[in-house]
Length: 229
Ligand code: HEC
Ligand code: HEC
Image (cartoon, rainbow, N blue to C red; front, side, top):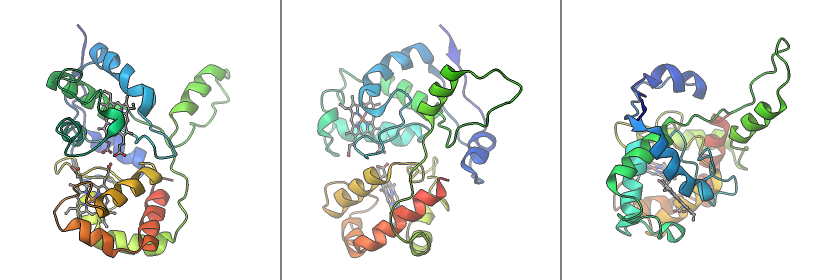
């Protein structure tokens, strides 16, 4: 059985990739890659083979997300505290026992998605298949319509303390990244929080999120989409 050790300092890896300095150590727990790929076959049907999600926001990206956050969401799905109808058949202790949750969430956290295609190397022979494979992984959130400048101001005031100065999230506090996540998925979550259908961070948040105008939300989403360039 081959164990992969991902105890690496993400400070060095994700930081430059995301074009930002992340002031925390991001440790990915050890996991068994074969088991993980087995479980991933189920998830890939909706979330994509690289867990990149879909740009229409139907399925969120899971790649590169905090493993504890992911595991917590699966727990919420299992206990129906967060309603996710498409995942009902999978979010059970029978289909996804705790050991599998640990494996798949560590695996998902370890997947890195490039934001752009790597430049062509003139000294290397052109490999069309490798380029095609790479292009499937490239995930870059298109600019969301709104005012990114106004959104950035609001974001810094209202969201950055938890979600990080650039929307990168906080692993130590189980706060998800927002930058790099599909805008329409985020919008749906914000609507669910406003309706009280999804718990955010405190019971008052439904009210708080309702106080932001749709334009302000669009501006925040616009700003987040610009952070992903
Ligand atoms: C039949 C489709 C389907 C399959 C298969 C599926 N998911 Fe999902 N998943 C969804 C949908 C839809 C959402 C978004 C729900 C919402 O809008 O709140 C989601 C959301 C999630 C989230 C929450 C992400 C976030 O940012 O909060 C996690 C974690 C997740 N899925 C994990 C998994 C894992 C792990 C598997 C494989 C074992 C899997 N899913 C298989 C449809 C699916
Ligand atoms: C006090 C900390 C805190 C603040 C401030 C905060 N958030 Fe969050 N946010 C969280 C936590 C914690 C979660 C994860 C909730 C859970 O576990 O389901 C979350 C989740 C979310 C999600 C769901 C992401 C996903 O992948 O499903 C969205 C969208 C979101 N926040 C948007 C915002 C926006 C926009 C603001 C500012 C207007 C904001 N948050 C301010 C703590 C915070």
